[in-house]
Length: 398
Ligand SMILES: Cc1ncc(COP(=O)(O)O)c(C=O)c1O
Image 1 (spheres, helix red, strand yellow):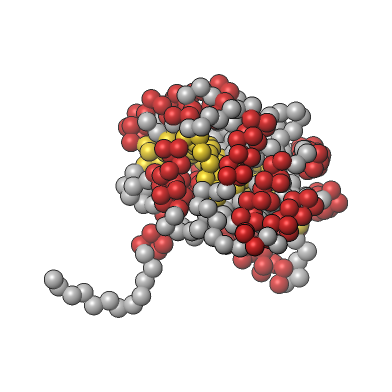
Image 2: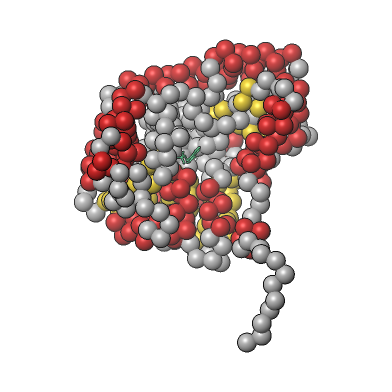
C-alpha cells in the first residue's frame, strides 16, 4: 500500500462541496446592518412571533420536575406520545391510523426530514423536489450524496408541480419525492386531485413520498389541509412529517414526529439510533399537552396571521404587486421588479428601508425572480414596514 502524506486536516468532500447555507449569509448581512445602527423590521425569518401557551409551559415544568424524565428517553417516543399522535391525526385530519402505523419522535421537522432523506438515499441516487423549496428538502439529499431533480412551481399552475413534465428516466430513477403543502415559501395549498395524482405517481414508480405538513394548522378562511393519509393508497408509499413549531409557537422547543407505516419508520429509526437518543421526554410531554389542549389558542394565532395576511396583501397590491392569494402559511411570495435578481433586490430594500425580505434564490436556483415576505411582526411593525416602503418608493414595476 502506498502511503499518501496529508498536507492538512480537511472536512469531508460533501461539506467542502456543499453550497453555503444562504440563511447564514443573510444573518450576517442583518448583523452588519444592526451593528451600524439600523432598526430592521425582519420579515425575512419564519420564526413565529407568538409565545407558547401557558399550559404547555406548565406541562413542561411539571415534566422537568419528575425525576423519571431525567434519564434517556425511549428512542421512538413514549407510549403516551404515540397514542396522542394517533388521536390528534383523527381529530385534526380525520384519518384513522391503524396499528400498522407508527410515529417516530423527532427533534423538529427539519431534523425529521433530514433523517428520512438519509435513511432512504444512497450516494448517486436521485430525489425529486419542487423549486422553490424549504432548504432541508433538497440539502439533506445533497449531504447524502444524491442528486436532486427540481421541478419549478409556477404561479400559472397554482404553485403545484406538473407531474406530467417529469421525464420518464427521472421518474424511473427517483428514490424520494419530497413535497411541502401548505407550502413555504409560496403559501400554496394542495387540492385533493393533486395529492391523488402524486400518490398514483409515487405508487407507479416505487418512490417514497415525503409529505412535510409543517403548516398543517396555519390556514385561513376555514380552509383545512389534507393529511396525505386521507388519500387512498398513500399508506404504502408515504410518510408525513409534523412539527409543533408553527402550530403551537414552539419553534425553540424542537419537537415533532414522522408518521407512516412501520416498515418505513423502522428505517428512520435504524438511522437515528446511531446519532441521538431520541427526543427529550420533557419536550414530548409539552407536545402531548399541546396536542390535547382546547383549540382556542391555536385559532387565535391563526386569526392573527390571517389579519396580517389581509393587510399586507392589500398594501402590496397598492404598491403594484400581484399577490397570489394564500389560504395558508404565514408567507407572501412576490415577484421582484423586472430585470432585478432576488438577492440584489432584497439587499437594496434592506439598505434603503431596514425592511428585511428573504430572496427567492434562498429557496432554489429556479426562484431567483421572487422574494418571500414573512408575517411574523405585530400590526404596528407591519404598518411601519409598509410606510417605509412607500417613502422609499419601493414598488413593483414590469
Ligand atoms: C416547510 C417547512 N418544513 C419544516 C420546517 C421545520 O420546522 P422545525 O424544524 O422547527 O420543526 C419548517 C420551518 O420553518 C418549514 O418551513
